[in-house]
Length: 104
Image (cartoon, rainbow, N blue to C red; front, side, top):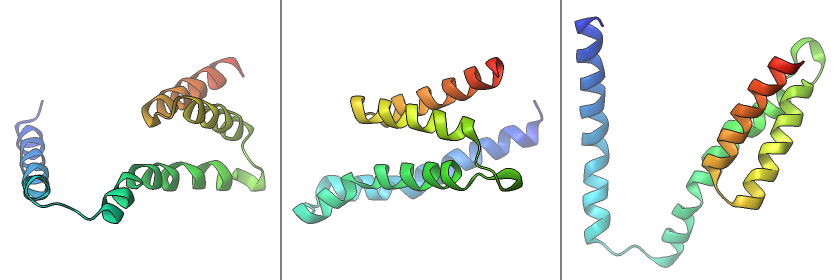
């Protein structure tokens, strides 16, 4: 591995840690209002939706919707709905795309 790449990875890890640590420290000492706590619990769902819905619905090469994206997206949605776990939906989606592309 290139030494510059390793240094870059270490610096990115340090910067990521330094930007998140103050908020973690502050949140353990300050009581957040209930409405803010409820809102923050929805952030992962919002981020997940904003990253997955547009590629599923608007992935239209040559003006046609991609059946693999729609089919695997529906299966991943059902997995997320039944388990209520975003990582399960991610794994189901990735495995579904791999299976679809190897079978068809």
